[in-house]
Length: 438
Image 1: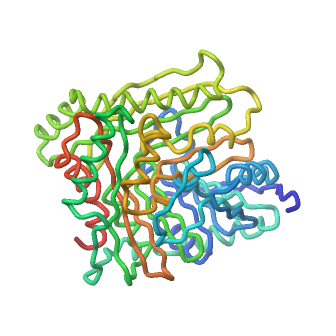
Image 2 (image 1 turned 45 degrees about the vertical axis):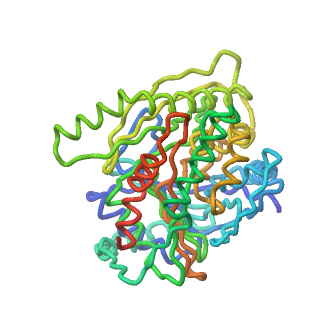
Image 3 (image 1 turned 135 degrees about the vertical axis):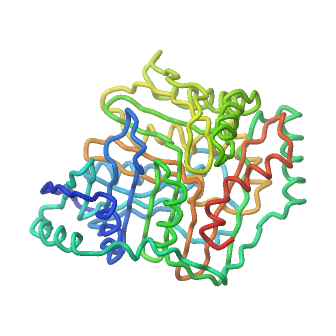
């Protein structure tokens, strides 16, 4: 591949109705084969860079299986030196450690995919930046006019799916047996914690990806929402969790461990939030993952720079309360961004501790190949900064195979009760279940 570093032309417009523009923008984007849409849904913190970001129409791309995936990404990112968007599947664990993934893959997503878009559109407040490669720069005013004239209202039409039959990959009794086997590993001291997941799926089913995403996003309004289209494969993601961000020489991770349901009654909702904040088991789960992230960071961070900025803080989202911690560190000037990701992948919140032993046991006891679920999606900037989410609270769809699924999990520790863990999984699955019709 020759060096594909482009000059980007940027033009800025002001829009009066940002929500309507977002809907029109997503409708317009569907004509492209490659689409990456990242939406913060108004959740801004000190690490936020924009409100929403759209990338479409691949100029170059990288497709890789797990073998040498990180080297391939490292070479691609260094050669392109431009914005790239895409994902890393959970099974890239097989490239970082001597591990394997032996379950059947029903979705057939590549293990890793990134693309360099011809067109990037960034929304910050009421400002919209069109950042096009120089070959496409003349299209900016035409595209802005076209997008502005699209009515996005039809996107919000609620899809009704009466013919989708959701099946369980792991039935309830089998789930209890597998969790009890995990607990036996914990009691023997093999591991301290493991994130155990299960899949819900439907075969020979067709959905409207954009309308389904719009409904999922309207229910969840998550800070790391993503709509990803790679030809006939789709990720519809309402993730509340940041896996890893690099900004300059600082890296940030914000793992989630600890979930409580919400109530429409304000006093009951406040009590549920306070109960989560005080829950010893949930705090123990969170702290274990914080320690794991600190250990991962220490592999490549400057000595003494790893810090816990927030420990076990409860944040409130549309459907659940979540316990989130924030860990930061400093890395050397010029440290390769892909090496930083490789040092910490997969994220501790979706594996367990110790990480390698937990992943080995997970592979033995789970009944599906995770693939993109519990992997990460996001982007790299031309300067080598990046921001990646954790792929949870998500629907995966292969249009050609007519296969749709979602997966959920919970952290199993010595104090776990299988029945309560199952209830937590159902709580996390609520939005996806509702979107797909019950």
